[in-house]
Length: 294
Image: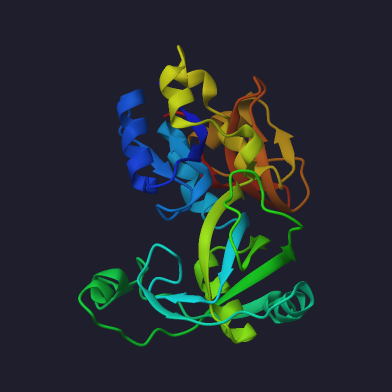
């Protein structure tokens, strides 16, 4: 039974759910979920969880993410990216010094107003459904964190080299809209801006160098061999190995004694199998989420 994480290099024009549907067919496995939506125009790291590993999806979506984004200045669209309808074009007189100056206020804890073209729900309807019907509603600002934001010296491989376009590396928290970031930077510069290309380089602790394309997955004689262990999502936590008695209690869902400091741990059986993510308090480990097959 397949169980693990596929790090897919999502192709352009596919939705994240399209990728999950394709993987369900390849593995003949109903339990498939992804670790953070990418817009159809975006490419890059899409962690896809298969089998019992889907229990980690809730943790994966919470983690930090990293992107390379193309910011096209002078163009304002209704979707905040260049796939949308152009609302306005403005002249651009921005050099690197001006751009760097504008970026300073977007680092750290900031607020974003989510775009109308998003899947956030309002009164049971997704915002993009309202937007397509020509409606705009008030959206409360949401707090996000930009951990790093820098200007790249040149267009990364695969990105179009376009006039009035700058390339940004962004490391951010869950819930950050990169196209909104580009729009807001454009507003701060006075000329407007849109996202013209986006590539995610890290999500859920997995990086682009480990990603495979859908073509590689389909051509593989053993697709299950491409699955990464689910404990890779929890590399930030220390590991502890438990004996047979504690393992029996763990598999029954009971707390068990453990020689570990207080905190969150990756817990392994004596055979090396990843069992669970647990919280140790005063020498007693309780399960946060289990990952062994029942």
